[in-house]
Image (cartoon, rainbow, N blue to C red; front, side, top):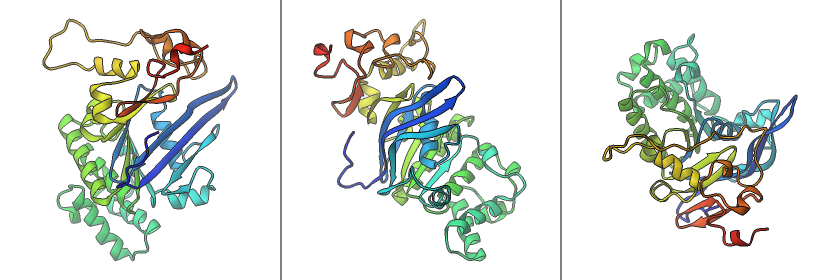
Length: 333
């Protein structure tokens, strides 16, 4: 994987992470040796189809993998501390204080029986040594910082009194309430109008960079990735198939799957009869093919692709898990 910039602290480091789920039909591997990192002040986008493992990666970082799921291999380090082996009590102390999360649906993330202010104050006082008055002042300041007008009045209102975009701003305020070093944002713009999406993305960028926090942004929307991220990781069937700087991955994708995703995005400057598509479907997690997991759908597959799993290899300003770029591909058995 890429080394952290000497000017940026590596806040989150995921190494060879394996997440499995035990079922009646056997073991299903949802994440298969995933390695990623997030540096201070940057946004890493995680993109892929539904079921690729994006949200599971975020849940693993948050310690939210419940039985029958479990972390079966690898490790997760947060600000240098290993957290994947912490007890539930120790993980609760980390969750919210060191790593925060912005969930996909703001309505279900907020308790409808309590005011916005009560929920913010409870989160703040759980993690910070502040009085009730101090927590209230901080909560109002957070509401103002996240762009909510008249925060003093809004403090005493309930979630149903907020629009979808305003609720998402409250969820961002909750995630940032204890000044976490890393924020996991799981589809934070889903179901929002395009104009509101742009506001939320810009808010997330400005707030986290002002604090020097790192963000892992999980989404299926390449438009969101292009607007928000510094680097992007492409996932497929529980594996990282390409990761690198945004411009390198989007403009000159190295993996055939990434190239297919880019080709499927319509262009305003071209009129076409039919949009490009990737034939076939992502395999079920209990029927992962040998070799490269994408090779049954790949138009460029050749001999080693169905036999050996390709490593991530350097390609310009990115890395791709593809035998087209591996030096020893032609000599594979």
